[in-house]
Length: 316
Image (cartoon, rainbow, N blue to C red; front, side, top):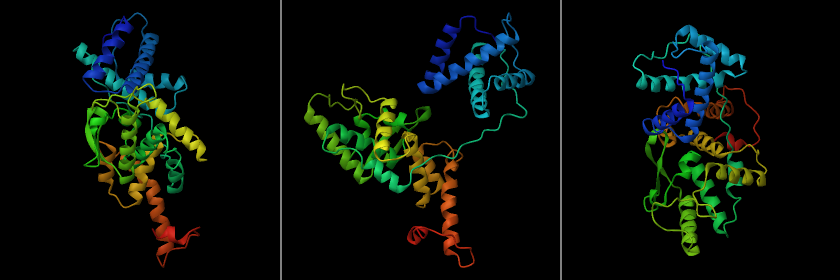
């Protein structure tokens, strides 16, 4: 593969490729560029004066060892290798002699942490936090309700425009990863809050009402950012006495877990979350399995009974 001499130009072209050809989100592009810099640092350490570099199974194994020596955890190394596959794919479009990504023997095992989620009592405390007598309280209530009742990612939520909302059909069109569109469903509570919020926006008179305007805006009429929503949720979590590490993805995790607990099929939750396969959705099975185990132990006549605080909850 060709080693770029002008890394600034290379990163500009690589970013454009990721953005246009592969519809990669900006946050992911930043990670890819960071991992590419790491790889070029390794290449320079291996062959400081070379203009081309051969990526073989041996050099790839050395790269993993080099990353380990830098203190990277196995999950970070696995992510870096995934980014490297994307880099190799791009380089092959620039140089036909670029090797394909070689197989890596003994690749680092990814230890996926179980997803954190809130129980129903915590969800109620969080969702009851906003002051519905103010426009911004209504906005925050809509945000919390939609994140929990639809399971959308925060990056999907911030990109929703007003014409993507169908109040008559109780749906919202969202743009997911890979620029894939999907429909999510509004609960009656979410729909009622949205109607009040949009009326409040209209009455204020300072926000354009055209359909291409962002659904959720800040006080300066700009599109609300991912970071702003993270701060909003952390603020309400703190007020509700919930773990301060609560973030938008916690509500997505809670949505998936509660759907499975309620009897939804894995494939239906997969579609609602926008996962391409059920493999990513399977991480939510564990807490549901624990609940099923408790039900079994408390309901089956041959099973050893487990103490429960609330007998009624164990039979749900």
